[in-house]
Image (cartoon, rainbow, N blue to C red; front, side):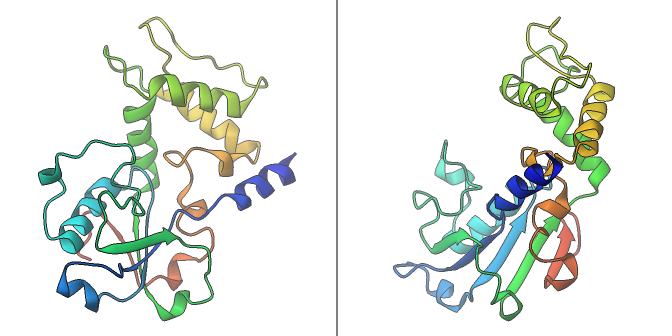
Length: 210
């Protein structure tokens, strides 16, 4: 089963984007943009990164669009938003060394806690929309061998931090971490699944000087 889990994880498409100027771009400065590989993990500051990129390539702030998804700003291939660039998920890594590349990371401990707070926490009296999605997903992934169940006393399924961490630990112990949703997926299986950090032009945090 562990081999099957690994094969399933390996079959998942890369979360990295390859971008280049759109053929019909309307911004003269975009013509100078060279093909590049961009990547960020969920809960690493991805929204801030894409909003900054949007302002650069589209010449206006994302907030000025009054846009509501889906698809969200994270989908760089969404032509309703991204009109000046062409973007596709990175599948061909043979030219990676010839392109500039940028990866946004986050301290793993901070990221794990951030994902818990935004997706499955019980430390709230108001239901988070993702509660009913991610709590069952995590418990289904860990399987019946776990004796951990969701709390429902608040009217929605949730996990205390200790149970959440235990579930993640058990999933990792089963070798199934590659099947986790992107918000919980280890970073070495995200941006760095195909190419190690040492090969990227820039690897930084959202608060880093780069």
